[in-house]
Structure formats: C-alpha cells, structure tokens
Image (cartoon, rainbow, N blue to C red; front, side, top):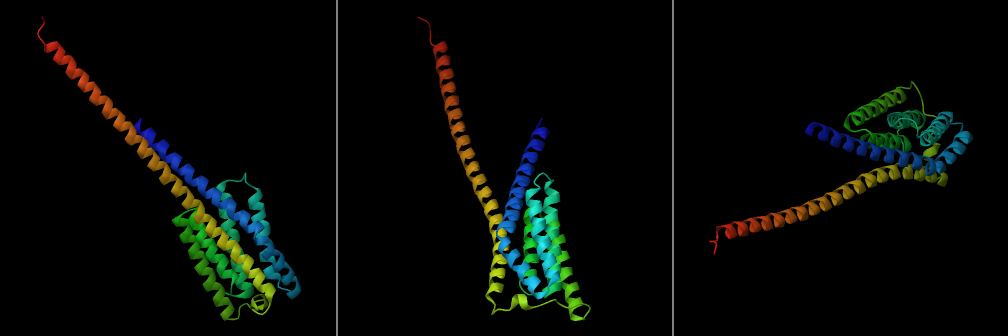
Length: 233
C-alpha cells in the first residue's frame, strides 16, 4: 500500500513538471510567432533585396516551423519540444554560415541551450550545448579556411536603422522566452511554497485539536476512575 502511494505521488510530481514544461513550450512558441513576426518580415525583405538566400531560407524555416509547432498541439510533447530545439539549432547554424558569429546566430544558439534546460533537463541540455559548441567550431573552421564564405554582413551595418529593428525583435523573442520560462517556474515554486505553508498550518491546527481532545479524554478517564474509587455511602 505504501509503495503504491509513493508511486502515485511520484507520478503526480512528474505530471506536474511535464505540465509546466508544456506551458513554457507553448508560450515560447507563441512569443516566437507573435513577437518574431517583425523580425521575420524585416529579414525576408532584406534577404530578397540583398540576395541572401541562405538567410531567407533560415528565416522561412524558423517562422514556418514555429507556427506549425504552435498549432499542432495534439503532437506529443517530446516531438514538439525536440522539434523546436532542432529548428533553433538548424537556423542558428544556417545563420552562422550566412553572416558569421555576429548578433543573431549566437543569440539563437544560446537561447536554444537555455530552453533545452527548461524543456528537458540536464542530459538534453548537455547534448544541445555540445552540438552548439561543435557547430561554432566547425563553421568557424570552414569560414576561416575559405571552404565557404559568408553571404553578407550588411545585416549588421550599425548605421542602418532597419537592422536595429530586426535585432531588437530577435532580442525580444529570446529574452521573452527566457523571462517567461523563469516566470512560469518561479510562480509555480511560490505557489507550491504557499500551499505547503497552508498545509503545515492546517496540520498544526489539526494536531492541536487532537491534543486537546486527547487531554479531555484523559481528564474524563481520570474523573471516572476517581468516581469509581470513592466509597459508596
């Protein structure tokens, strides 16, 4: 019986953690689609104007993939979460190949590593981090040895305000995802601590009532014994 209770409790904790992670995933996808829309539109326009087709492919893949994962909520959690992480990694690598290590690629890969820790835990996070480090070194070696060249650096020309608009939108997406992740977990932790404090307080009150009832019972038994020991007249 005790083993069954422990198993049930563990199952409840696992289900609760899975629910939190799914909530983070849904909100992250929503932020990527809604807030990232500005960055997507700006990137598409600039990519077409400058002939940066690899950047265009990455932007389309990122936005379309995030939109599909957001709408396909009937898919298993693991499929959607791994799909989102894989999407971020692919887009990050494409961005590295297209523009080098400036701005967005590093932000995308860093955000993917942080999101992996929230959605899955340590093991997947270490795998994601390892893949990101390998991607950085491999792309860096390819670019530095001349095996491939960046498409354009015009996306990071600081004197063009539209570049600032795109970078601001990308920053808002990944900063928003990080903030939402922390907020969901923190709020849940605060609520759990509050519920635990209320439970302890209720338990303390129940124990006080039990002690009072026990004291009354003992007093009643004592009076009963005393009455039985009194000599009969």
